[in-house]
Image (cartoon, rainbow, N blue to C red; front, top):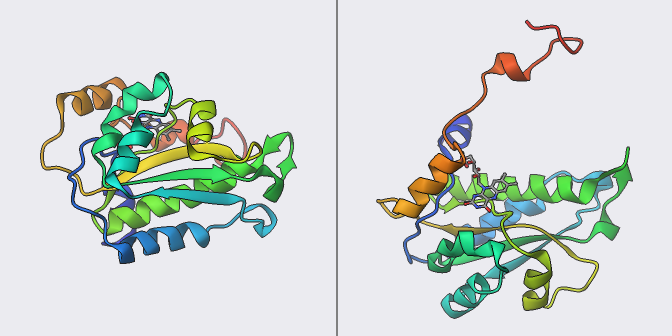
Length: 188
Ligand SMILES: Cc1cc2nc3c(=O)[nH]c(=O)nc-3n(C[C@H](O)[C@H](O)[C@H](O)COP(=O)(O)O)c2cc1C
């Protein structure tokens, strides 16, 4: 796909076929994360790859009460949990860059996946404490996000459609609302 087509056609996928993601594609996805830019190139991201059906179901049952909204992840053939080691990033202007570093890497991974027709859905709906315990993460490691990865099923579920409408997924603000030229308040 052309680069911009990948970006523009990507959408959150909430209904997955059980077809496995080939190992070569998984490796490309991980490479895309590995090559991301980061605070002083400290590369704070760490990824937990869950690729066994029983482990995926187990994980889906261990994301806490709020995680129930994302229970559809149980059907995906692959889940990647994007973690960060804040000691391998930094803080500037009171902003914790481990979040930025890991978000950049994870989005690169999602776009790379989509380039191969593999869908994903960024997830913040989980209880970090529960996830950390389930995955045996060391205490200093943060869970930034996770995502199912897999081939989209042809039809969306009613729940998937509901979530899409609920989050207004299709809408994007016009550039005029987002962009200021030279100084704040100057449009065009
Ligand atoms: C930080 C963040 C957290 C999100 N958390 C969830 C989530 O917990 N469950 C879910 O189904 N979608 C989640 N999403 C997906 C958004 O709802 C979705 O990206 C947005 O509606 C735009 O739709 P699109 O991805 O199809 O373009 C999240 C996205 C981001 C960036």
